[in-house]
Amino acid sequence: MKQTSLKSSVFILSAACLFGIIFSCSLDETNGLPQDQEKSDRQNGMHDNPVSNSGNYAFRVGAQLCDQKPGDAEGEPEYTEWMNMIKENEVIQWADWASDNNRYNPNYVKIHLETNTAYRIDNKDFRLHILVRNKNKGTDNIDQHGITPWASEYLQTKKYDGWSAWTFPENKKEFDEIRLGIEVKDSPGLQIGDVRFKIQCSEITMGTEGTVGYTPKASAGGGWSEYVTDSGDDTNEPDPDCVRIGLEVEPKTYTLYWTDQSYGRDCATRSAEIFVNDTVSISTAPYYSFDVWAGGMGKITVTGSFKEWRVDYGSVDFIGSSTSSSTKVRLTGKGGAKLVAVY
Image (cartoon, rainbow, N blue to C red):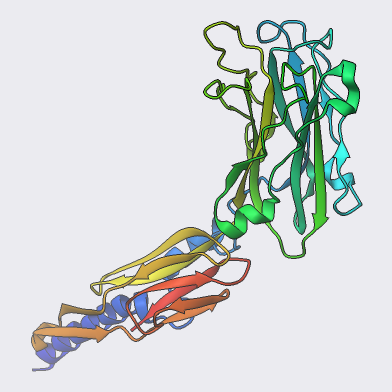
């Protein structure tokens, strides 16, 4: 009898241990993660609220023009001031006029996004400007001033790219020179994740727009676009009359984690890259039920129901309810967040 009792005790103890191991996955009120998973995640920096974008560096923008074919008879590139060096709000900082080497009817244009990784552009808004002219007429020959929207406008409307107006000389024929500008203003709280520029040329007639030239993103180190020109027409070789400049902006994103419980046994931490005021759908099993063998006691069925989402860190709003196993979450603050399904 004593031996049988001892065996039963061992079985019951084993079942209790298994019961505790399984429940520790979803009911651990200290961290909501399996211990090994939590340790691994911390070693890999998972809980350091990483920012996925790394392209919010200070920059300047430049232009270079050439003749006949890409790289032929290039003029000198001309640059705006570095963004971090601009101290005045809403005052355009112009580059010098750029052209090909004889400063007459250039055929191709390219732009440069040059980054300065020593400085960030948090809390700064910006937009780009572009002018063209025929050199023999000077500034009196400027007809259209091209201006992109402010970077913050792209983020507010969630339309992350756009153009300036087409800019052309007064006679609307074959510009000689291009000038780029940048305008900056203070914008507390504004955080930009990444940026790149684009440029396009055209003749004054409809349907002659050339291909778009894109710079690499700031997060990739920036760089030059390809040389671009207009598409030409039946009588003319590419010889652009007008040009426009574009801006593409990405919001800074953070990592939102949620730990769910799938049918009692699987405990997983999932994640999504999300920017402030955006939403993500999260879900977990509404209940779990599984069997544990407890020796002489036979099979024990373990059940549980979802109670709520616990916010371990970060600032979020629930679109729906925090007590719903499937819901949407809006990130309302910077720095990411972590949620845990509690049963």
